Image: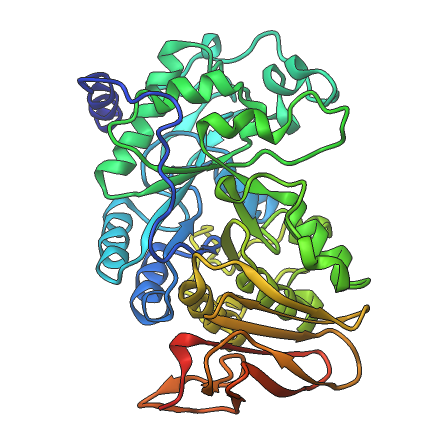
Length: 470
């Protein structure tokens, strides 16, 4: 594969390696949306028509490398997490389509973060064929890329999270575990990431980072040609776990799993205790916060679109709160854990049509408009916290925004301090601002900063300085 040789050569030719931990923080509009397994052409269209106009700062796309094609298993979603090569020819599209998508998203003001699988290759003992059309004879043999010596041998199984060596040198769910301590393997992995950067990719989600020693990640980052926003999948386990998220702070941000789990517990119990939410988690400037992702919506550890309005309220809180870099999930409809996204018989993902197999949670007005709220209140602290002691809460973000959430069956009727200057504001949960007016209800704030609110059951109200009605 000549393209790989060129990418590896480019990585080797970097004049001065970047020091570990040079991953940059997201700037400007920073909300990430995970368009899970969306084809590249649909991502490009979404950047132009929705993401840019609504203020999303970045899109997380699924792993762009070729992966094992598994028609006998119904092309499960997790195919894309079993790379067979680093050719950009996947079930979501080819290299040209990917490059066009990145350019289109950039033109809309949206960064592109690629999900990167560095820990392993496939789990196919008898080999198989990838979406790039090439065959591999065994899960430890990828012609012109890796041989058995590039994997941890003899193989063992990850089954003891109190043992760091077991977690990081054994096979996760039977996937061939790359020897990331090898400089040759590191160079090939960095070559893949540098190839993506050459097409304009701005950052990476590091899949299964918990299963890669942090020194290995630092060494791979040191071979990158330019800084990138890096956030790592290191789930927080029990106190006895040998590998903990904070160990990976030097190499980038962390996906904060406790955020989504905590929101599920609160919204299915009492949200009155959310006044200090985020305490005890990763530092805010190191955290990527989310209500759910593709794994947690399937294992039930967080809320998901299947939870209806409660899920919407949790997203309103997450985008209104002052913790982490928020990430919004956009998924497809599924019934079974392994269900494929809408696709043809060849596994190639079908163009996205919201409402026809695609959930498109990120387009829902309350969620999409809270992205604008988040952008408008950045840099402010939470103030004017109020709760009824159960499932009705409200808070302001400095003098720039105010949110009230009613997670109960009755109406929230209160006069509350919003912290905002006097005026009339568009309730962005129910309306859009345009031509100085609001397509939905408005909230009037008096000279004392207070507003008389009436929030329906299982509903919310949000106003911000950028949505003042003239």
